[in-house]
Length: 441
Image (cartoon, rainbow, N blue to C red):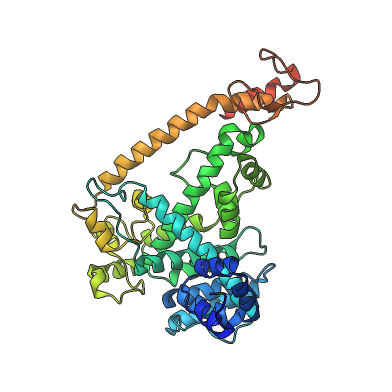
């Protein structure tokens, strides 16, 4: 391939349909890298048009545009919101990527889409290993991920990033809950539920890191102890970390060592925020208090995947109809569908769900109650196991110790000359602090 003329090398790169392949090619063959740098805008335009589904392009461009609001004024943020709303209402959201954008826009879009691709792969690996999406006995391979499933995942991830750009904690002044409600109201109920599934997945992945640090670090156990081991309720610390965006989350998840992850979390300890989870809860309560809009949206869900245009992620999937057909909860984001959101139920096609026999029996709240009881017991077990170490680490911190806690305390770092014996008592002047922390739990 080194011997190909420059124009053919450009054409080869333009025909690639994902950014990972483009990155692998230009970093493995120096001549392709040189040609890419000379024709970057042309090549990126073609690859992005192939990589980003048309049904997702409007969300991708809006997320890219809003990412430039590093210190947003409310007027600029609301203008982006109005433009987004206008294109949706005028059916202009499937317009192709314009060739007139500056190179910096293509580069930023490419960087964001690499994040989307990484989280898409991670979500599939995470949920396909989770009951009930694990293949049944005798099934060798799971059903391959379809274009429609990818569209739903990409769309929800871009919308999550859009929320981070417009409502994120690190970008004051932020838009308010009214603006968030306006944005959520632009989407059909099942697309809001797709976003809710993505929020649940990202929160669960974030919890993996928080739980590890809270289980071992002396100081971080103190600040994150009440955050860890909780899958059932919203937590403002997690919401704050989620609001920092996909790039932050990928950095945190991809760090190779415990110490690097601990350092990142230590930079954000004692930070709190209302974010997307709170807005989705508000959406449910608004629906439950008299809105009939979503009830109407459930009606056309009886369409099967075969009735819709392939590759566009149109309409709700079959599981949405199955989960809400009983009419026991209004609208979307119902708390008693949390067990379904754990495995991203409204993202997968009928053929995947049918192959696993997931829709054979009607949905009932009994499923959720049983699941909720199991999860509560597991969270309670893990928290109780950790409670003793939290008390010990609290005492260690009062005495000046820090570092990685284990039962033998061998990795605790003490100030010079202050390492206590294992039986040493906390000084009297600090006893009231320790007792207060124990009472607090």
